[in-house]
Length: 443
Image 1: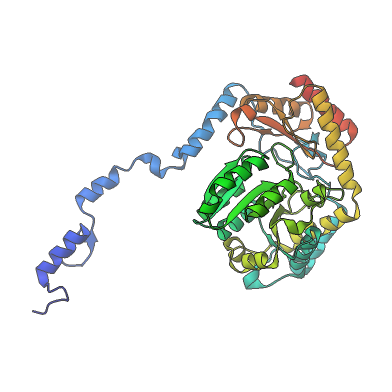
Image 2: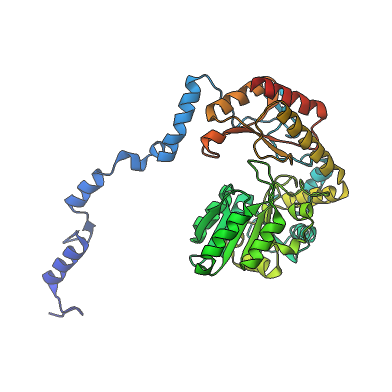
């Protein structure tokens, strides 16, 4: 009898296989069957582990919904709009004053923006159909990136198909376990998800507190290779603005990278809407990573990163969220490019937005509405302090022709539940006056 390389033959080899695999080897067919003990273990798996309605997150979601139903509160979310959502909108056949859109400069639905998108469809179709690394470039994609780089005064820019994914893939790819990402305590979820993906150490510093950031870095900077500091240009929940020069000074002294999320500040801050660097009179090249979205002031969909050419080339050739994702749709790229042109040609839109937001904030504070940290730059919260109360107030305003969404736990702490008003340059002074008067009366 011949032996195998373990010196085993026949039955001895079969017994080893059975002991090693914990299974019974079929004598005739050679099939392997699961032993009775394993089958019993299979039956012991709880039902909750194979049902979507038993996911803990879903069960938690049902609790506030049940409470709202008991109180007779209608669901304030996912209302269907029947046209362009600007300063006003059509819902259920009614016209509402609308404060739930990021259409800050009124460029979504603008005739020139619509035409640019239609022309791009005629030329390129509706999709890039593949990753740009695979399918190649469309001229409009590259022109948008060059225009954004010029806006910030930096070397280059890369556009992604999602703003949220831009932060996730950029941070997740560039940084790793030997690095630290330290961020403002009120930073956006996309940054937190990017840090998880990176596997980097994470620290938060108190909101807008550059001195606290400095103190933390003095203590722990030496423990890490690369350090990334992340702040927002305009905080989307609270509507306040960081002291950019101070953060630049801190990052420079500690040899760190500084990333600014401009999702809500592009088109809003600065005399001509160029964002946080224009607001503070700082050269764009002083910040290492400019991140922004196309879905707000620029009337499209997607995100971008602008900065040094080495940063952009690195992301374009290796970041999973770019390499393995379809390129931005040509009509969306064309829409954002045209919106950017209009923003630069018509700075009065930015000035009008600033005037309307400042007026809203002043009226609200005069009437005793808690507007938190807002500086009157397009985002103005009304702090209610209870998720159920915020939902109820949103419904009451809706009944009176005002559309504004509640921001509830866990998006914010329960005691910070609020209504969040987004101001557009297209809002009229009477619309602002009406909204604040009704809000103050209901509060």
